[in-house]
Length: 300
Ligand code: ATP
Image (cartoon, helix red, strand yellow):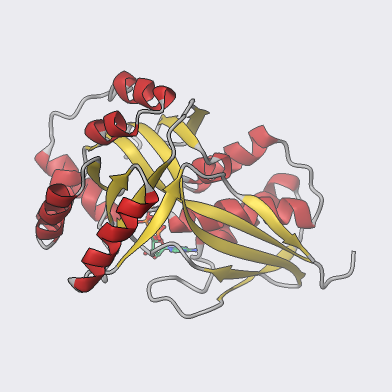
């Protein structure tokens, strides 16, 4: 293969339709019972064979490291270590997922890099091994490979696809400033000292998804991190109240925040809601869900 061959992989953002959080385990990780849904905001990651590891962004984005700290480089190194190979790649990321927004953009980049390098070098890594490597990189990385809608257990890394007959539209309300995931979890530990050891799996949400009942899904949206995120970002409360007053289906904090989400059953209502928000000076976008996980879009 000539060294100029490259593979581009598109990986989606996620929302947690349900995020049940337990008290931290002895290893410091939080047990989760979560239902992930992949939504149509994407990062595109292009990998090319190179002598050394490097990472670039197609456009500058604040808060994204451009060195070994970038999770995409960590993913590449983990994959080559798994195969005992001394290979490296240039990684170029086109970010469409908000950074530090609770939508797992870094995890999407890690998943895209794993898949892209596997295909670039024809490593034929098994799905089980890819998921296992993904789980060592971050709790949300395996789900970015799987996509669709899935139950996440363990610390979120054990992913089981679930039937989802819904097809909805998320109004994604963006925040100019990110929120640190570790800081939100630390505050959660302080205000929820009696969190369960094993958070329960939300069976009613699984039933609503299987039934394709978007209205019931909207009623059941839940996120245990919400009180902690509200304490750290009181400015979210006003937008949340506005969304609650104007969105029939349901409102949600995305992961550890600060992105807020409003669920709409049809796109025309979602568009009207987005236009009204834009007129108020609030930045927002629309994303369908569920969508596919990381997938190759170009092999050139
Ligand atoms: P988490 O996945 O921890 O819930 P998040 O979804 O809120 O996080 P991300 O966009 O994944 O937010 O970024 C979290 C942090 O990870 C960033 O602030 C940044 O310092 C670091 N980071 C490392 N690599 C990347 C990457 N490729 N893209 C974005 N952030 C990255």
